[in-house]
Image (cartoon, rainbow, N blue to C red; front, side, top):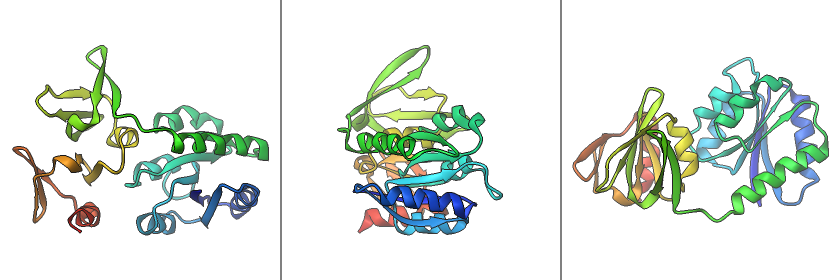
Length: 223
């Protein structure tokens, strides 16, 4: 069963998504929200598989809102503006629905998320850097560090790899059971953590800070 929430500043748009979800037996729409702050509270307390997300909103842009989500939640964007399509897929959106969309088109988007979630997770990923593709086993990743518009992937007994990606991009490619965001600039491998002391994590000889917003996620590792 796919769990989901929907966020849109138009109640009528939310009602359409709710009605469509009621017609599908493998998805549960847990809540609908018109305010980003309330949706974020739900996600922090009750992580879901999927969020239906409007892009053009009076508060934060929907794309920026999605980038602020710490959980590995998939997204289907819903919007009246087709111009955002390229930006949407740059953040690994499952699909991009232009309003008004039919039930048939909605169902195609759900089939994509269904296939995405049941696909076996690979232990490797390919990263483009230095004009070539690097095949990386995620077990070799110690942690990933954000550097403005780039990330630096620190690997065990291998050279670091620097590439033009965001932490959100690579987090979506890695298994949530093995990696956790501990700071706005750091994503770490749980298996490589040596110790957690006060506001820092030790991985090999590296000391990585724990951000205030991420303390709760790190605290779960201690339980």
